[in-house]
Image 1 (tube, rainbow, N blue to C red):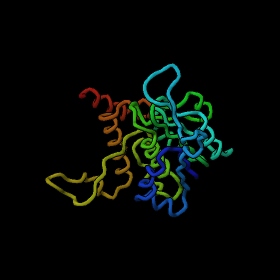
Image 2 (cartoon, rainbow, N blue to C red):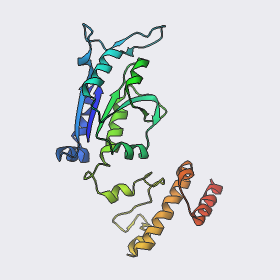
Image 3 (cartoon, helix red, strand yellow):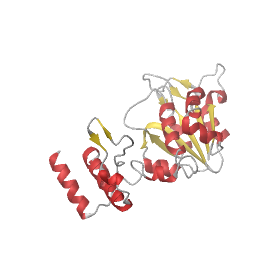
Length: 239
């Protein structure tokens, strides 16, 4: 996979590409990455990429010309152009999994008051990190890149991502490591039993309990057994 970020601040992504799992995956060539300053595509004499909005109003808008030219310069027939905007579809794990299958992702990071509306005609997807506003698209882009890259083959173990929260619609089950007992709190005995089927059942049940307790809205999309449905109803009654 290739990832291209169109931004006014390419240096923002230095930390992402030089830290932990993402750094190792990049050095192994599991994906390629470039952050392109779209200011270099402007035809304005003083390098401007923004201007005041027609009709008046606060702030400055990003102009069509430099951004659309930048998109044309990096886009190929296999590219998917993603505009980062509060007006877009909310980014979720299912979308990360879908985007991880792409050949080339182009992220367009906004700044200032937003984009000239005509730019939207040149993108394929509009995505948002959530119902809040950031100073620019760079923080959201970094989060989305992290979520997508970790799903690429060879970046992390497949069984690690299979058990992630949201991967099966549920929050992840509780996990423990040494010591067995700390401050009077012990690891559940089933995890020490060595009985893989009992452990699997316990983890599934705990995932249902945690989801019902903290994010019951997620259960609308999860197929539950009759026993699990009864368990959920009991938990919701106590809330």
